[in-house]
Image 1 (tube, rainbow, N blue to C red):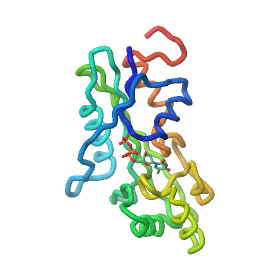
Image 2 (image 1 turned 180 degrees about the horizontal axis):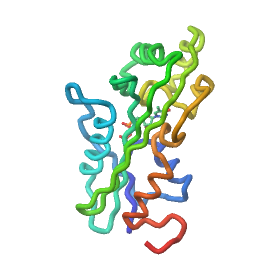
Image 3 (image 1 turned 90 degrees about the vertical axis):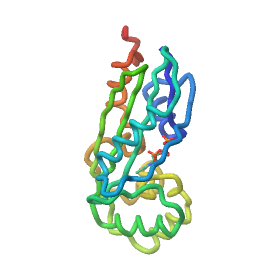
Image 4 (image 1 turned 120 degrees about the vertical axis):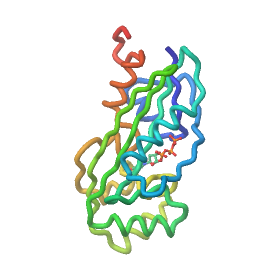
Length: 192
Ligand SMILES: Cc1cn([C@H]2C[C@H](O)[C@@H](COP(=O)(O)OP(=O)(O)OP(=O)(O)O)O2)c(=O)[nH]c1=O
């Protein structure tokens, strides 16, 4: 069985490598990522991962892995900021509070689909002007849900999480391993 990573995210490729998997091909999904009116973060995130998995073309001997990471502040979805101004607004909204990072994983082989949603609670310390402006200047906020990356400088501002660190970064490796094994991809050399 060939493994296809349906993601343009370099983080997801690295997290797969962490569990010893190198995709045979990478095919970036192209879907409309706008939330529906009134759509809540968790169902939105699950829908995004599923739609990505359905949008990536694959053959009968191929397993496609897609994921979506969504930052949720209560019922509000914080997507990837369009510019530094929006990133600043997100960071101030997250300052001194807990929020959820939801990552949905979808694995497809033929017309079979395996799905998992993993939620992590993340606490951000009360931020100062210097911290927010310094972080914005780093540019690390670009292309990241909620406008931050826990795996970079922003990690200095996160004293506590409950859940899956790899899920926050974009691919919860334990849950992903279970889905991939169900679809016939071996991780520890076991017979699929
Ligand atoms: C919260 C958080 C998000 N992120 C990233 C992970 C995802 O790449 C991104 C959320 O956007 P996604 O839409 O999940 O993924 P993507 O557009 O980067 O890639 P693709 O759809 O092709 O798979 O935010 C971090 O790297 N660190 C973090 O701490």
